[in-house]
Length: 191
Ligand code: HEM
Image (tube, rainbow, N blue to C red; front, top):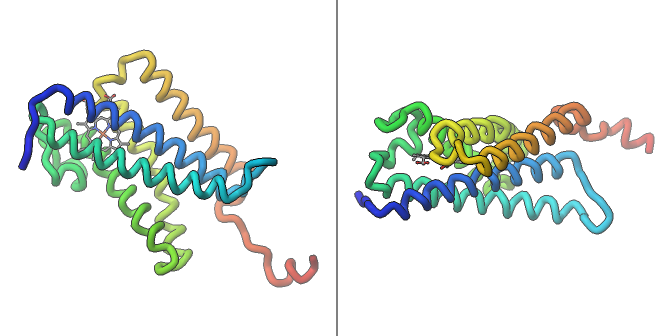
């Protein structure tokens, strides 16, 4: 529908891609901090949940900008369908396909979270588990297709993001049960 041939669109798509993966990293880390009820003096829990929400929605905005600029870039031929239909792109089908999978998961995560009050906790939680798949898929997409993967600072940033997510997830699953258990009526009565 539209196409731009200036290299700035390409720089923009690379920049927004990198910012997106950093924001997704922050979002996953804060989501884990929220579910594990992490808090500290001067850092109440509502700050974590607000930041998790803000980081996630900001990531959605940057990913939208990333996708629009990739499609607008006249140098590569990526169409709208390729952004949401996995592995349908004629350009780099595998790597772009991973980006589409991550985008689909992110759309599901965002929609169910915004409608959480209406859809019930069980469905919301089931969908939210896919966040643990969304991040590695998006990360692999960036590493695989990125022009800037070979740059030292991009590698250092990627390693930092990976360490943050792997570390947070490892801590979450070793310290806390998969689904935090609510106290049973009997146990609550004993308090
Ligand atoms: C969760 C969603 C996504 C995230 C977090 C993400 C992230 C990234 C990152 C980090 C890069 C590497 C930038 C660089 O090193 O230069 C990248 C590159 C790229 N992405 Fe995505 N992406 C996502 C979705 C998509 C989708 C849906 C498409 C297809 C429309 C797409 C197409 C591309 C292309 C073509 C490049 C290569 C740009 C270049 O020439 O370097 N991405 N993405």
